[in-house]
Length: 381
Ligand code: SF4
Image (cartoon, rainbow, N blue to C red):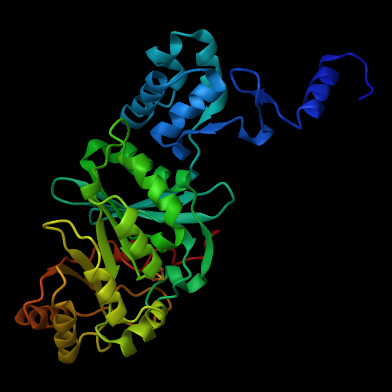
């Protein structure tokens, strides 16, 4: 490079010699790629953070634990100011220069009936939705794992636009963090029932679970996390074999026979009900655990007496609970919500068949925050 010896010139020579790298790790051996000089905390499990702090700054578990605790438990966004960091002025400077917590920006929140829906705008302008439900003694956050969804369930608003992209780990963890910021430790339950099919973004979802479960951080117990799938065979198999054993598995069922389920949920064509049942019977369910089957009652479609009988028959030999949800229509839905009488009638049919059910009053319908209503508008608004 031919230039006068100015600061700028030296800088350019440095970049040219190091392939565009701006930053070095602490030993000065490995130039970090230019785009990687920022360390997005939401992306790192605790062991990964230990490794990264060592690689960059020659720090280790002590500082990683302090950062995890300060950031996730004390919700302290000025990490350079926490005592374990300020002890070294140079490290404090590096922390304030490099560490970021980037998971998008909450741009909208609406609350009604103890339901709070919030919209996060991601760095590329796409938007995702999450919902916080207030129960008697705690809060549950329902989070998204994808922008859109490729499963194409006919009753679901998210599925209407197809899959746009998978969420990054930071974008998944960020939803739980935002909910914790708002409600503190009472926010105890996390359900992957928002936008997207979690098993279609398997690795990122599993890594996000590692982050939110870590006791040094958000400390959400595994038994308080539920992952819901429409029925991706490979995901169910893998989750049973290698996933964290205490997490609850929910299945979005919605129909008790193949003809109807294939019509409502195209995934049923690749994994029909008998195969799904075989898979679930082989699943290593923990003692006292059961499968949670979500069943959105669509009046006149899946709530006839024969459907109750078929559902009861299907659930035989499966430890199960049915989460009976009244269907929540979106703006252009071809189905309607059941009336109270219709809900009661179908519930009684199931109880008569000894189906173990839970039925909750639907909340947040006006916010388009009820089950099946998320992502009902175009993703970039
Ligand atoms: Fe996807 Fe779930 Fe909607 Fe089906 S119900 S399209 S799996 S988000």
